[in-house]
Image 1 (cartoon, rainbow, N blue to C red):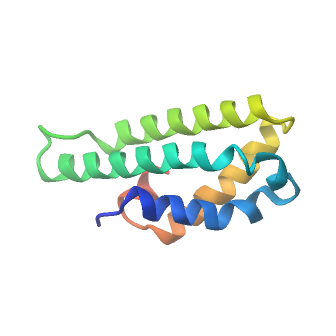
Image 2: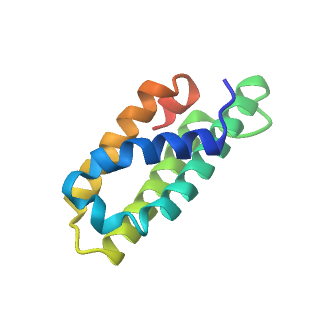
Length: 114
């Protein structure tokens, strides 16, 4: 399944307001930029895993993809915390909601990574 960063980004933005609940007004000026980076990385990870699954001398394994996505998520959390007064727990709760929806929407490689 091929998925574009724009499709992932659109889904993240669609879910973000509800996921952040009362905190959305605090992050809405910063979050889209961070979510765009996350969407680009997630699409690249999925593409590389698909390459690896066809030929394990190209791309990288699903395990590597999970690590890379976790790094991207941690970076996103850090930026959102740094530019707002929200706590790590609030940011993690919102991102968990967003990621849950991504898993349900984009099955296959993306669901395996996030």
